[in-house]
Amino acid sequence: GRLLQSVDYGSAPPVVHDLPGIALRAQQTAWKLWGRAERTWFRSLLYTLAGRRTPMWLPSFADDLLPNAAIAGTALPVEWVGYTLFGLGKPNRRDLRIELTDGTVLYRRATGAAQTVNGETLVLDSALSGTSITPEHVRQISIMGLSVLASDDVEIEHATDIDGSADASLGWTAVVPDGN
Image 1 (spheres, rainbow, N blue to C red):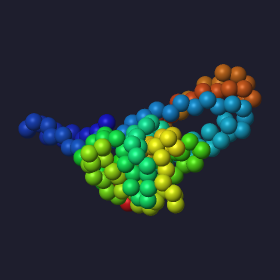
Image 2 (cartoon, rainbow, N blue to C red; image 1 turned 180 degrees about the horizontal axis):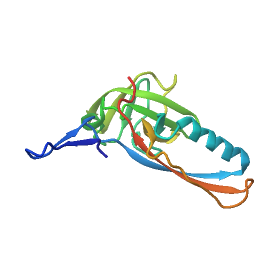
Image 3 (tube, rainbow, N blue to C red; image 1 turned 90 degrees about the vertical axis):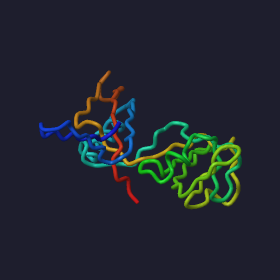
């Protein structure tokens, strides 16, 4: 979505301003809470976020980038998705969450990108590890952005008593600026 503001003085056609100049990502997360400890943790998260007041880093949890060759040093070769043209240097498009098949999660920032014959190569701010990582060892690469809750109201649906299960859904909206 876009953060649009309309100005209408009544003497001319209304003017619409796109304040940040970029599309802001919106997404939903669904939560299944089991037992007292998870519900307590979830409520603590909600109190910390204080509705739409406190932003937090949130990955898309999607396969935004797919590696097509071994990742060595700071070079991340990926299939073409238009990142070089449309995402490079844009707020909420620079930071990556790289999850490996062994459960390791790495966070890096893309500082550069170039189109290649096989796709695109992103330049990371630091190397992932001392050795190269093959595409088979990468579970998911998600783009991260600074986000706030889309609403101050959150409902928790209690299916059973406090020791059973509960469901909740949170809407998120990206914010600008997302940090330097």
